[in-house]
Image (cartoon, rainbow, N blue to C red):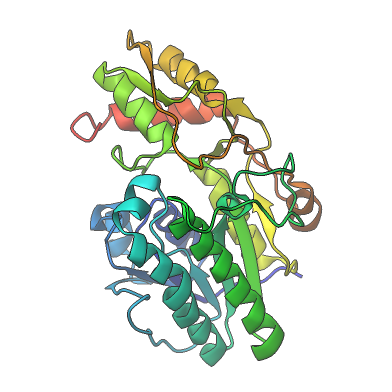
Length: 317
């Protein structure tokens, strides 16, 4: 049975994914409390939402202290540095977002009787030995490697969420997101698409780690938002993958960006990154069968929209 939400709290609500989630919740009629500490986001991401009386923007670090609200029926926990540049710059804060931040968000859901959704990540699979990755795969993560601050923060957040469901009867959902991209990304966030597009538009070399044979599966932001809210509204309580199951090598993505921008930027290769996953592709059978969700925007169209968005903001790119 589908759930209609009246009042939602979105932690990390001014971020790349948080802002469009807030916008979509408002479009669907909800009152939205947007919490963010702006460590990897900015007020400009939600500027257009602030004229809506149903939207409240609160500068708050959910990792440091709880937040109180009344009559909440949905808590979406998206707060965490999510790109390599950010989580390597804020390693302790990233682990705290997965631990203290998740606990505080779960406590809010428990106090108010709200449904809780954790935005987890495909990084819980690490450098996977299973392909494509299904939700029953336990992963292959180096707990002391450079990416561990993000990977293990999300793995712990999933464990804590599952514990609150089993032992405190909180109505929880867990979504594992794969390589989301689109308008709203920060050009310097270190993500694959934003880096390639910014470099191509600036005429700089497009830098590919290693030989570029590692694969990724790109999911356009609008599809990711639909998937998050489909999981929040649905009755599936186990982890679910949200991503586009079309695998491309990093080199193919770089060449596609180069072609779509019409740039003369060369593709250059840098040293391989430690613990970088060699393959990444979701099995979305559960999302399709249980949530009725599948991605709609293909990679070429999604990259065109993203390039146009960056091109309209030359100072940022």
